[in-house]
Image (tube, rainbow, N blue to C red; front, side, top):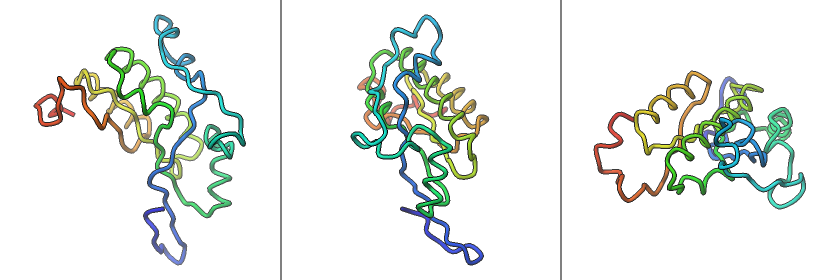
Length: 165
């Protein structure tokens, strides 16, 4: 946990690295028709199996109740199953997949926007589209973004490619 502090006699605890558990078909449900068969599907985990110990991973109302039980004031939310897809070589499919995920996360965080702090996944192959998606997600209530940690070999971090972003 990070961000422990005292605010007017109330302890504020913010988890700065929490994760959602993306439902198995969220990308297909939200992708354009022409991409529905191509976007990744995630494993379907039942509550209590693997690391899906509580329903709040994919149900925001349950998550807020779990946070209250744990005394957590807010959580910064990152993807779980989407993370390996930052290595996708198909730039358009990655962009479509990440937009669908971001749409789901925006809706998820609307359950408690001051407590559920969404971090958008941004595809940066096409930097102009990345900037548009970052702006769209900010307007949707997201508080930050995540991009690949290992860039495509043709797009090293030290290049001018990322300047607009």
